[in-house]
Length: 290
DNA sequence: GCAATTTGACCCAG
DNA sequence: CTGGGTCAAATTGC
Image (tube, rainbow, N blue to C red):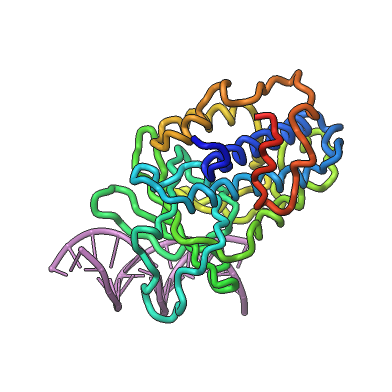
């Protein structure tokens, strides 16, 4: 892999995002550190989101081999590509060609939250599968003429595997939803309990509906706990998927990762100067230690 | 009453 | 004709 290739930049972005996440985790583990340091927790969280978004953009924009057609890195799409459809009045003129399926995500659980708000618009029995497929489009489909869609279907029972396939690109404002969500992270974390968790600011976005297997359902009570255990589970999950490059990065137990022990000093790993608004300059990741 | 979901009908490519 | 994707009226939930 040549230096500074788009793919390498994407890998660096992901690794940088991981580092930000670890930094944030440590802060949240020690509530007094919640707003310590030169960069706020909100900026950290936003940086993480941006890193992953841009990495996905890079990976999904580059020409792919057949096996690399789908990425399983994440569920965020911020590629600023033109909207796929021009006139929504007529039925089904959306380009459903080969290039419209951007990536897919196989998960043992339905995806609770992937950074965007989705509205379900259909559900169908699929011939070869015993499970129904659910169809979602971006909630900002009308407001922002956003053509992003996704399908979700349970493709395996034991263990359960939910496959989410993403189509099109979000033309709604990047991080539109995440900004709202992470707003609460900025709030002072004086409560010792909340310091252990990230509270998503969207209150009861939706009620969970296990019947169809998916719903955008981040409940206030069901806080997302960032822990090493979760990271390990994620690595395990992703390690079974066929994107070898991603597997190399994500499933590596320790080799590709900086040591995640609590002994490391935060400043040694996290360089606040690397937080920047213009995320086009990925070369700045070269300054990072990896 | 409004907004989101459900579900049968409709559309269309193969 | 068939299967998959979408529409839109009906239903549900807040």
